[in-house]
Image (tube, rainbow, N blue to C red; front, side, top):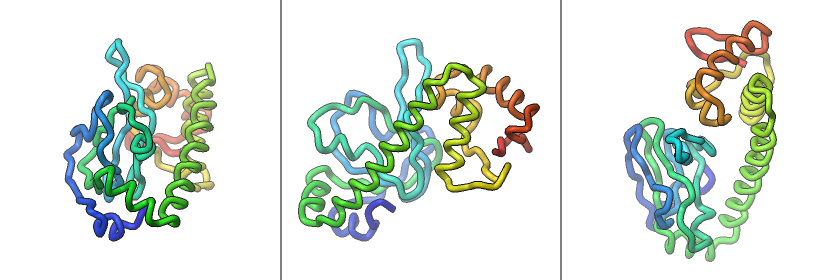
Length: 198
């Protein structure tokens, strides 16, 4: 956890349950809460004018999300939607900012988390700029494996569907399906019971 759950609850936070597919906040709405995932998976995304989806990130258990918006009076430029049933700790903006103001260690911990996340995002954006679909998908999967600190071959189970990989990489799902099969033939990934292993 980025911030200890007990500390959040002692400072006015509540735990809310969201069902799979439920939206936590919409693009264009004003930030009112600090969010930290107790359990579950959330996607931070946008929908383009053509109806296609682009996923910015997929925070999970213990991660917080969108807290940087609380330090700036601007609308969200993303949506937050639950991928599966999730329990989310929510703390009102005022209570969150007051808690940080009174506790330097919490602020430093949050800054450390944000620095790590920004490094991750910059590396991911660099990977997404690769033109070759095969190279782009493999590099994204390889980066996710490194992020999860798994080094052994074919021990990392990709936690995303083909559609989610498409949404993460900005490619069509058909391209992802075809490319994953090509990567399997090249012995770069293995597929077992529909799951991708790297």
